[in-house]
Image (cartoon, rainbow, N blue to C red; front, side, top):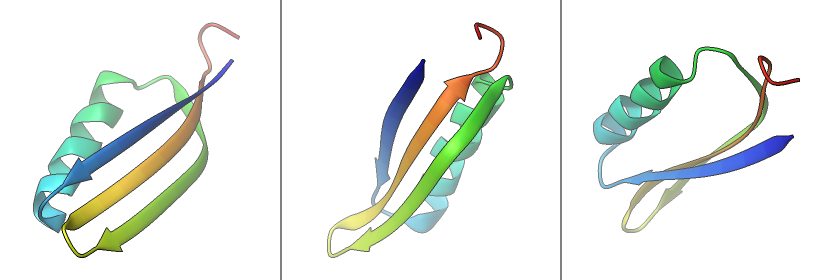
Length: 55
C-alpha cells in the first residue's frame, strides 16, 4: 500500500533534519516519488512511499 507524507519547514536546514529523521524512523520503505518545493514561506517535500516489510 502506498502512502504519502508532506514535510514542511521554514529553512532548508530544518527541512533536511525533518526528512532525515523520517527516513531514520522508517528504514524499510521504498521511495516511489520525491518532490521538493521552495515557496515564499519555506521549504517542502512530498514523499510517496511503500513499506517493503508489509508487502
